[in-house]
Image (cartoon, rainbow, N blue to C red):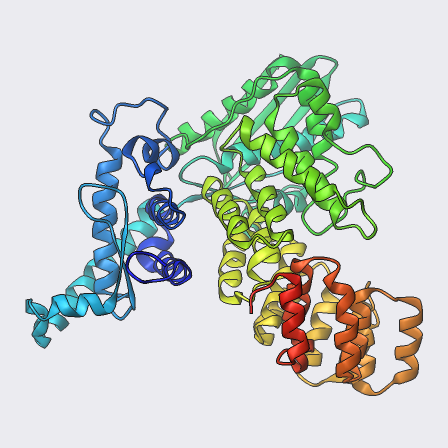
Length: 587
């Protein structure tokens, strides 16, 4: 409990409500400021709520900056207090929790609305007509502020299309893709930019380019496109920043350099974009000093890690694991450790994988953070590890830190949803995170697959069907919506074409087609398949017995399984509650 008597969970839920309001939703600067001070206070880290620390971590100031000469933090704190006052006078007028930022410091205070009511008895607030007048005035101010935020402070949306590989050697294709990905990552941590993710941008790889159409599909105001020519140790990169609505070129650059200058070229491209759009370079911009050979291996190995939800072709139990060769060349290259943690995460999800993969994943993520505390993907990986161990509070802190460092990372938000929010039944928060991820990655089939599944778990079947149509498994997603609507025969027709038969077995059970159920069970004995088959048949005891196999796969898998509506008929069974406890899930 916080000193106010409000639990940390209540405060966090209220914080999400505040951040989703008009006054904060499109102002990443103030939103990040508020989230940092609230989270640090809830985590007992008040010692970090100093002007020197906030200036560096929130507003991108350099270490050692002179707070007496640079008043940014104090100025923004004043704006935050004003914005909170507007919120509680308008959208939040009936909220049960109030977040304050007392003057003279950066440690927030939390109060219940009951405490506010006592204060009201001593003020003009007792007068109803003044209360109404003030509320109307506050809403007018908030509306004006919202308009200003929308038109002046909204992040600029930009997409980086895959650089065209012009190299004579086709084996160098990974280099152009890897360089594209690195530019996306570099731009993602610049204040004022909302960068479309790798998955959506790479939909356009190898396709004829139409900047206006790409801008519309990616919901991006600006497009960065270009080409890479690598010949031996010589490198030529041509890049162009184009305004999507009228195909107008704002900036272009041609870089003829040695391969050793590849990181400097990335900096030059970022700087060209920043200067053209008149932004400020963001907090924590990374620049690593490493050898050309190590960096080249890093780009190659990153090409082995496709989007979340897919098994990388280069990651197998009996093959060399990506990034180990990079670390052998440069043991101080932090992104390689984060990449290796991601590879171990994939390995840990393979049936029959070595049990120590999670241990290795944690070691690699912690090593990456030691080398670079501002490396978002390392905090993301650590969040996955903690969640799979059932250490929910530590997992959430890691995911929130990763999002704080890079709000544009759709991978982190999806991991946050699938590893923690969804398994714990925090569906509304999961939807909020997926909505934010969709803004960064509007064309990702995997994201829409997860989004559809979460909405199905929430019983929002009409909304789910919209995402089903864009998902990586349209048949399964749409079939489940039809099942929820009671259209069993229609669902069976669609599910018969799905790559996975797990929900087809459930549908056969619902239809009473026991022969087909038994045939599927014989050829597809997976744990979830068995659970769904018994569930479709309405066999309570069989379903709960089959769930015992899921427990062996860890608390995240148990939480995800129990969240699906197909198992709603057993949720109140005392054996299921005992199973949740055994798996380390809260009631």
